[in-house]
Structure formats: C-alpha cells, structure tokens
Length: 156
Image (cartoon, rainbow, N blue to C red; front, side, top):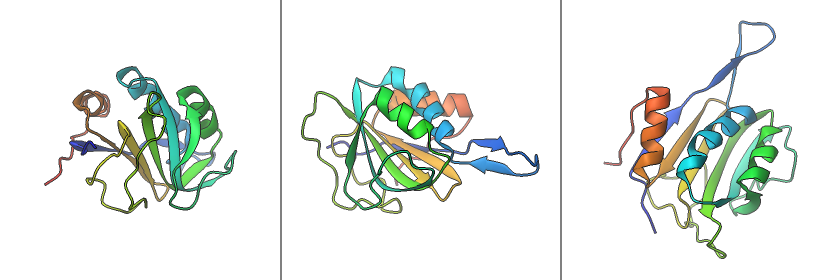
C-alpha cells in the first residue's frame, strides 16, 4: 500500500453576501480541486468517511467506514451540492480495484502519513477552514503546488 510522499494544504475562500466574511471549505471548492487533479489520475471511484457538512445531498458516512459515492462525475455532482464541509475524508481509488483496502484508523484527525490503502489520492476537509490533499503521486502534488503557490509538506 502506498505511503503519501507529500501533502498540500489549500485554503480557498469565497466572499459571502455581507462582503466582510469569507466562506471556506465549500462543496464548490472541493469540486475545483478534483477537476484540477482529475487529468493526473486514473479512472477512479470516490469514497468518503467521517463526513460532516451543511446541506448534505445524500447520506454521507459520518462514521469511520468508507462508503462508495460513485465515479468522478457522480462524486463531483454530489459534493458540488454541499454548502460547506466541517470535516471529512475522501479517497480516489482506481476503478479497476473492486475491493479497495483502507487503513484501520479512519478519522479526519488521524495521522495522514500512514498509508493510502488502495487510494491514489486522499483529500481531507478540516473544520470549515481548509483542505489537505495527500498523494503518493508527485505529479498531483506538483500540479497543486504550482497552481496555488504552496509548498509540499513531506513526512519526517
């Protein structure tokens, strides 16, 4: 199972109606991130666990058991309807893997540098504030680093 070689922390924000407040960790922000990395990924199915959000369009798993959401198109449509994520873990797993493996410690705050299981990418939403993207694929991390002028955090 691959160990993430790095992580990018990305904070995207949108001015809300009163123009003095910024909303972060929106469903639209997650859609943007997925669309940016999708060309660098194999055809994937997306899974989610430990999800808490405003305006959930489906019954996401708020416990620590990964649930299949669907292929990238279905996942993008689903998370695009979410108003804002409080927390959550999302995995892109190659669709060729029929019985994906996930690590046992599945919580938003668990150590992210353990392993990715069958996933090629793991995205975590933190406290309506930011997303962290983990991958063992340098191309995914480099793409996001360049687009958001952010450095790649490496495990110690």
